Image (cartoon, rainbow, N blue to C red; front, side):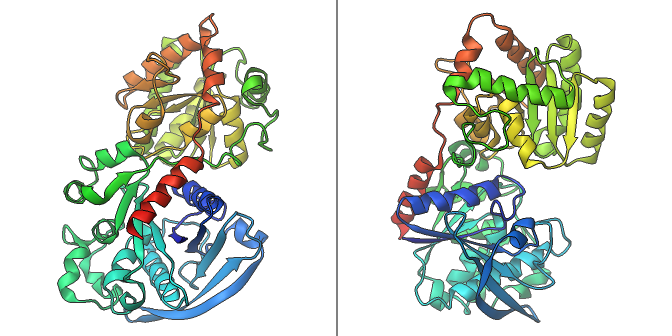
Length: 473
């Protein structure tokens, strides 16, 4: 089976969130199962682009409304990622350093989708599956099935759409209707939602199958989907949730090159202690206290706005019995509040503002607990990385966190869960973490050893995607 993944992100070429990790791993595991999976994404000007060799495979042109643009497609030569990676370049549109955040993002990603469809329509052999990820590829199901330019070549190709975050839908006004290639006008409703052209809604309507990145998140979308709740209820028959996996070759404490000391489940106590020693020296913590860390975007979705008050309250309420380390960036107010806490609660709290891949690996290895009090978490990968590294997750019971973390107070439990994203729930959970860490029995040690053996590799999830493809092929 030949599968083409179309995405705005793919690690290590470009990554903003979990989407990049998923698209950077799933195709490799699908290839390992004997299929042919490849990735097509925009050619941003990133470090990965300049450090690798590429070959030109196609050049073409398309129209975005009244504007004609040229595009080119290049391919990474060595297959170093375990799958073929293709980059689509449009001068003046996709040649940016950042993935998102530009005033012309609508035009950028529609142009990208037009170029991808034009290129695929010229292939001698059609792929079996086109797998689109998030709204930046959300118009492709409609383009393939209904536009005059592409439907004769692509209408019979099965299209699967995966939602990594339903809060971001890419909607734009009908005043830009001319961006869409010509189609039978009675199909305009397949583009519309609440009097806007909504790429995510269109993809849910037009794709052959729709998935999200965890079963619980699919259920949640029927009740909280930023306005698309009724659509998910109506289309529930073709929707399913498949939990994300992690690339266990990249995220492996036994071989991770970013760690001070490598370790496995048998040596978890000694290995984590050495990595923790590095962290506490770097950030000024007491090595004898539990280290509770947060890694991620400092945005409301992640409940990052609650962190300053919840951490401050925890320090005072529990007499400084725990240390807190935050790695991330986002809301300037949260960044400022955390930076101020570095001074007022020095020795108890420290923050690294920004993105640092090497440090993130060290934090997973050296921390005792990972805090994820998210308001929205479609799947979450951080808790899976934490488990892999023997770090106990502290999570809110929502989305993929609910599906992957079981409270240690339950039979066979191994994490700490909270019901709500609130300062009170976070503070209470921190207290439970301190109690677990200080427990004089070997419960904490047993949990850290056991969680390293939980299998969250992509192998099982990749098989579920293959089964889904076969159901529509």
